Length: 127
Image 1 (spheres, rainbow, N blue to C red):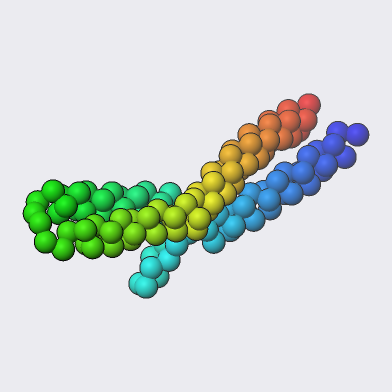
Image 2: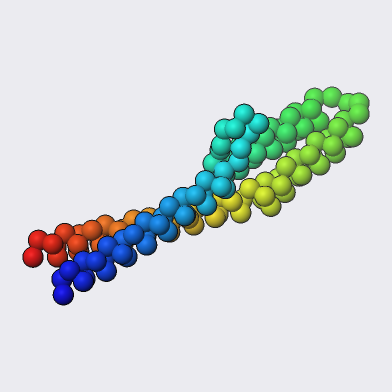
């Protein structure tokens, strides 16, 4: 009876390990790739775009306060660009961040389950 249970646990362990591998591949596919082939985490991309957006906004405010001239047109263009960056970031990158976090949480749960199965297998083998 013990051997059957051990084999059943090993099968479960293989199934969970395969699920973790698939999750890791799916998470890897969420990464952004630049023209040189380097991959960046969705969170890194998300934060970088918000920083760029903040720079646009601060630059616009500084320019608007610094002098007269064609300030209104410049401010409107910069605000439009900032809004476009923010919207693209929220629509394209944020869902990837959420999905990556969910995959990480799932993998943590699966890893805990793997450790429990390993402990159970060791306990049954020592009997």
